[in-house]
Length: 159
Image 1 (spheres, rainbow, N blue to C red):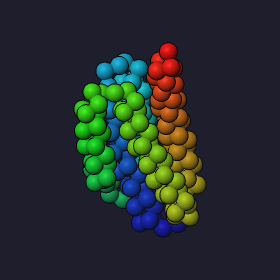
Image 2: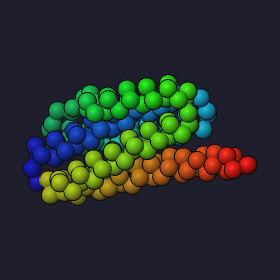
Image 3: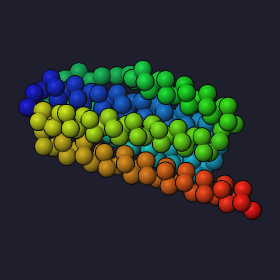
Image 4: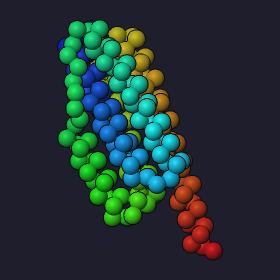
C-alpha cells in the first residue's frame, strides 16, 4: 500500500464530491418544484457525507486535504446554468444535466477504485464501493424521474 497514492486517490474523490455538491446546489436553485429540490438536497447530503468520510481517511494517512473543485466541474455548472435559463428551468433539461453529471462522477469513482485498489486499505476499498453504490442509486432515482416525465410528455403529445 502506497500512502501518497492513497492520499492522491482519496483527494481526487473529495474534489469530485465538491463538484457534485456545487452542482446540486445549482440544480436545487434552478428547480422550482419541491420534489426536485428534495431529490437534489438528498444527493448533495450524500456527497457531504462522502466528503467527510474521505477527509477522515486522508487525515488518518497523514495527508493534506485537497479543497476546491475540478475545472470540468465548474464548466459543467456553468453549462447547466446556461441550459436551464435557456429552457426556462425545464425539469427535463435539469434532470438530463444531472444524469450527465452523475454518470461522469460514477465513471470517476470506478476509475479510482480500479486504478488504486492495491494502494487503498480494505476499509477504504469497502467505503468507496459503498459510496459508489449510493451514487448509482441516486443516479437511478434521477433517471427514473426523468423517464417518467418523458413518458408523460409523450403521452400528452399523443392525446
